[in-house]
Length: 103
Image (cartoon, rainbow, N blue to C red; front, top):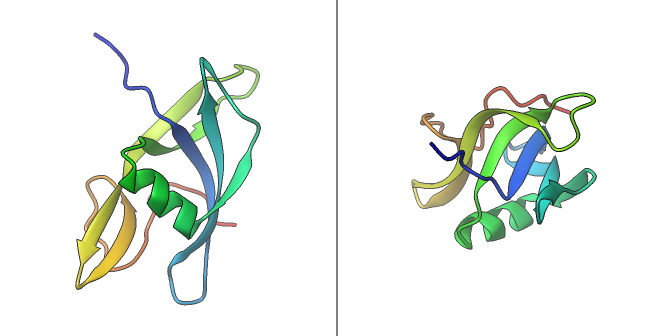
């Protein structure tokens, strides 16, 4: 059974006062490994999801290099004419990344 390979892992999120994601702290896949943490704004997240990139919520396992504990994949949902970024399986009315620490 093959494991799903993600293009980026979201480790932390910061929400704007209106409830939308302002930015996230993430690790992006660089070949067989991952980058150091990078900051991606909401527009960059939407662009990656629209491009078919696989993003997931998760956390890096200490002392295990590019090994992550995955919580849930991210999805881009259209609701009431707006784009919402959420973890798979949730039905929020605004951006919501379940199990991702808020900064």
